[in-house]
Amino acid sequence: MAKKKTLKQQDFQKKKLKVGKPKQAASNATDTSFVAKTIHLPNQTKLTSTNDAEADLLRRLSLCKHHSEITRKETLIYLQVAVPRVIHGQVASRLMSACIPLMCDPNKHVREELLKLLDVVGSCDANTMRLYMRPLVLFMGSAMTHISAGVQRDSGRFLQCVLRHAGHELVRAAWVKMLRGLCNVLGWPLRGAASASAGAGSNVVSMHKNRALQHQNLQALADFIRLGCAEPAAAALAGCAAPALYAKYLLPDCPQPYSHLKLFVREFPADTAAAARPLHELDTLVCEDAATRRDVFLGHFRPVLAAQLPSLVKDGGDCGRVAANLLQLLDHVQQAAA
Image (cartoon, rainbow, N blue to C red; front, side, top):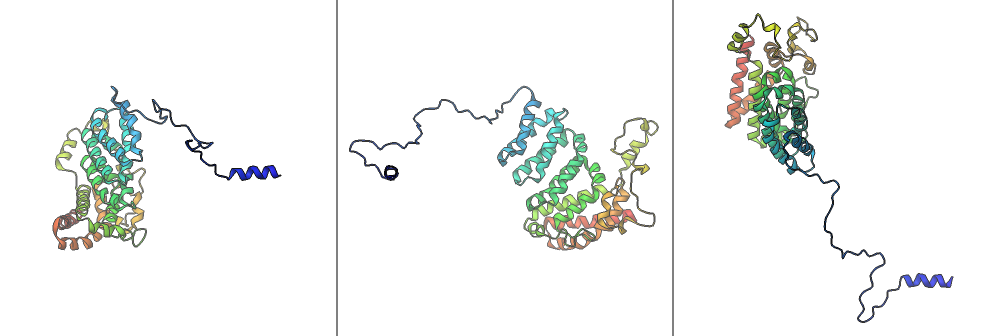
C-alpha cells in the first residue's frame, strides 16, 4: 500500500529541469517534423472542361445544391453559356429539374442569375418552357407564399419571364393560382380566402419599403390579366381557318385538344355563376377559354383591385402609372364581358 501511495504522489510532482537540458517531451506528444509531399482529399471533385458538353454539364448540375451561394451563382452563369448547345438534348430535362427550385433560393444574386438562365432557355426553345409548366407554376406559387420577403418580391419577375415565352400555357394552367399569389405578394386580402388576413402580413410593410419591386409586381399583374382576358387575335383565327379540313389529322398544338368536350371537367350548374362560388373551390376549375377566365376575374379579383389601385394612383410615380393603366384594363375587361 505504501508503494502505491508513493507512485501516485510521483505522478503529481513537477520534475525539476536540469541546467542545459531541454524540456522533456510529453508521453503523448506527436512528432510533426516530417514534410508532406502530397495531400489527398477523398471527397475532392475535379471539374475540368471536356469535349463532351453534356457530360461536363451533368457533373456541374449537382453544384446547384451546393451550400455556398457563390458556387450556385457561378454554376448558373456557366449554364447560361452551355444551354444553347444542349437545349435540344436529353440533358435539358435534368437541367430544368435542377434549376427551377432555385426560385426560392435565399440569395438575391442566385435568383437573378436563374432569371437570366430561364430567359436564355425560353429564347433558345420555348417548347422547353411549355413542357415544364407544371414545376414552373409550382415553384412560382411557392415563391409567392415564401416566408422570405425578398423571395416573394422577386416572384413577379419570374412570372414576367414565363409570360414572355409561354404566356398562353401559363394563363390556361394556373389562372386562379397566379392571381391569388400576386395579390398575396402585393398585400391585398381576398374575400373568401382561407383566412381573413390572407395576404395582409409582413409583406405589406416590406413592399412599401421597395417601391421599385412593387412596380415590377404590378406590371406583372397587368401583363398577366391582359394576356389571360384577351380574346385570340383575328390573324391567328384566320390562320387556323385555312387548314380546317386537314387540321384534325395533324398533331395538336395545344396541350389539351379535347378540352371542349369537357369529359374530365367539373362544371358549375347553369344557374350558378363562377363568381358565386368561394375562392378556394375554383382551384379545380378549368380556365382554358378567355370567357371563363374573365368570369372568375370579375367575380373574385376585380373588386379587390378596384379598391386598392386608387390609393396607388394618388401616390404617383411608376407605381401610380401602372396602377392607372390597370384601372383602365379593368374597365376594358368589364366591357368585353358585357
